[in-house]
Length: 165
Image 1 (cartoon, helix red, strand yellow):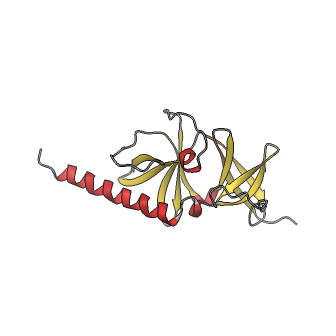
Image 2 (spheres, rainbow, N blue to C red):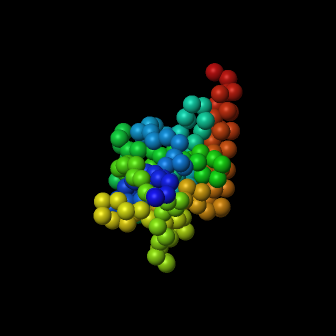
Image 3 (cartoon, rainbow, N blue to C red):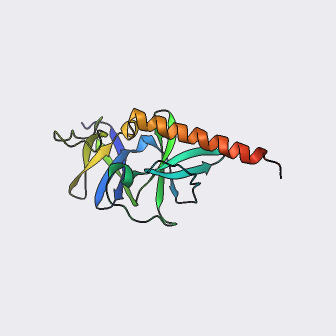
């Protein structure tokens, strides 16, 4: 008798393939224009206004220090839940939902951590693909900086709305 089946979404950044548990992903969007305010942290791609909610969008390739392609209209943004907040992740390509059996992915070999956020690996196309934990993609300090940036952008947009015409 086999265990419960779980799915991960496999995606690409540069030559690297990663996965996120499907339950952490709220939406997959095609790239739309982002607000890019001044003093944006290096890993930020900008801010997305999604149905009136401001969502910080990160360039995951920059965060991980791996090569990524240039952003265009077909670049996917993964909207995920990270520490009770929504964030967007710019990735190069979204491949597929991949099922795996059991409660969690296969544990990684020691020393493989991908910024301490990989929780295991799944088999995809004859390769082991690291599964990232959405809650650990950002460190606590990075989460705070992203949240501060989001609040700053909300204030800036409110000031623009209240400015006399």
